[in-house]
Amino acid sequence: MTPTGWLLALVGLCAVPLAAGAVWAPLADVGLLAAALLAAAAAWDAFRSPTPAAVAVEREAAEVFSVGAPNPVTLHLTNRGPAAIRVEVEDSPPTPSAVEGLPATVDLPPGRTGAVVYHVTPHLRGPRAFGRTFLRSRTNWGLWERHARVREDHTVRVYPNVRAVRGAELLARQNRRTEGVRASRQRGRGREFDRLREYVRGDEVRQIDWKATARTGDLVSREYTVERNQSLLLLLDSGRSMCNAEGGVTHFDRALNAAVLLAHVALGQGDTAALLAAGAETRRWVPPVRGAAGVRTLVRQTYDLAPRYEASDYGAMVREVRTWHRRRSLVVLLTHATDDVQLAEIARHVRPLRSPHLVLVALLENSPLAERAAAVPAEGAAGDRDAFRIAAAAELRARQRRRAAALAADGVLVVEATPENLSAAVVSRYLEVKAKHLL
Image 1 (cartoon, rainbow, N blue to C red):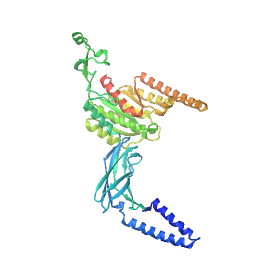
Image 2 (image 1 turned 90 degrees about the vertical axis):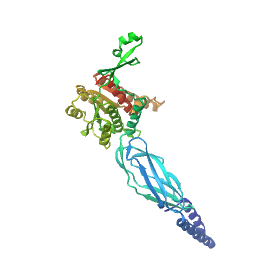
Image 3 (image 1 turned 135 degrees about the vertical axis):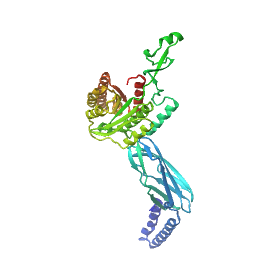
């Protein structure tokens, strides 16, 4: 229990006549009387006012949180005391995280239960624990603040953004297109003929059935069933460059979210998915999985991974692939190249994977660098310095793009996307690979 500012102000007022009593003695008596009355009032206020210790707290939250996404938490507060109370609530969610909705104030009649709902956006994956819940209330006359701490052990597992997987599943059921992800109907340019349909823009010339076109007078295209039971191998860079963060979420988490979403789509297409996470050394190997349970297996086995401040050994990563995964696969490397030197090293090591695999390098763009390169310099002396910085950023981006173009010219698929759009970009490219029968 601590005094409020109101009580301290009253104590200060009582001290004035006590100090003035040194000049005129009767004022000291007035000060003593005022102090005695204030002490009695403060004691009465503390004794008769309800206490937050009488409030029971129960926390309700999911067992699994999604990193980088708001997750709801509900605090159920029950007043077990004989009088109504107004309490201010503060909780201790897992750290590091962003919190919305706290602190909150709740009015609780005697014997009644209220609820506080707030949202937690975790910034790191892995097992995370809540701390104590703090309650604070003022006494009836506002002279004291009372505090209570409620300890409730509560641990959650922070997974990659599984909400994106749920969203993709919903989109598949509704057969719609959104968020830049192109829906697939299991048809493309495979080996087995499926049906004839009206030509749509984007169909290749070789898909046109000229005999049916001549009969109907309108362009008609052939559709083939997309092959199933193909293989997807996800290579997740967990080295130094993936420690960079934008918007409170690391590049590694963005890449892991994209990997989980891509695996979900691939498994839904009837393919298998495996994952290798590596930096300076192999961190985690998840053997090929299939079916609806495959995504859950991937998430459970990768949710506690984190990048390390060490240089990635792309050569060792490629050797692991060539040793343990010889079946022709779509190999997707999710990484972030800080400069063209690192991108050149990536290119040197992934080129040998082109036989027997189809290689896709998904690069997270450096958003601050792109913004700097697109900026307009200010005027004056400061503008001269800005111009040099902008020119340097533009040159660095141009060199990176030349390296990426050279990699694409060598037969490696390349996707460059901002961290926010990485998931949609890799899924769209995967569906394009399936539709065009590139694998």
